[in-house]
Each structure stands twice: as C-alpha cells, then as structure tokens.
Image (cartoon, protein in one colour):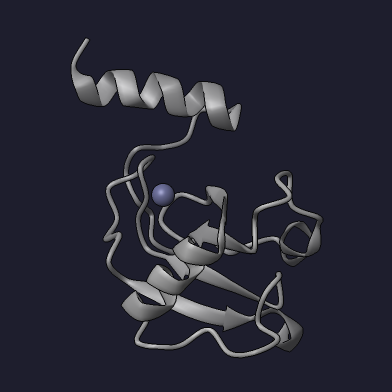
Length: 108
Ligand SMILES: [Zn+2]
C-alpha cells in the first residue's frame, strides 16, 4: 500500500465513509449540518470541501489561516460558527486546497 492509499484508509476510518478521490468541484453544503454544534469544544468554524463534499471542523488558528488564503479576515463576531469556509480540495480528493472562500452562515 502506498502512503497515499494508507492516508485514504485512515481518512475513511476518521470520516466514516468512502469518498470519491476525484474532485467533482460542485458539491453543495447542507446548511443544517453547518449549523450543528461542533463535535469538539475547541472547534470554531466548519470547513466544507466543494470538491468531494467532506465536512471538517477547524479551530481558531485554522480559521485565521483559511481566512488569509481567502484574502479575508476573521471579523469580530465571526467565531464561533457564524462563518464557514469552502475549499475546492482536501485530503480526500484532488481539488485545489488553495482555493478558499469565506462564507457567512447567516446569509444562508
Ligand atoms: Zn475534498
């Protein structure tokens, strides 16, 4: 098994499902899922991959990094969970992980 394949096995175990490895690039997040409480008390925002539909949680530091990539800033009141990030690729797919958009959850 290659390192890449091992990563995917671990990812499947962590995320509980088998995801396509090729980015479709047009997945749409379930807004209800984005409004659910985080599974970790340190999580501050969701990260949704439009490439494959995977949903992650990120801590404040991760949110700052993602905002920077998106060319935006974390504003007062954004955290926790008033915003989320959409990314075009992640560890589970082959989309572009540098294409990040910051989104406002209250806009729907
Ligand atoms: Zn992905």
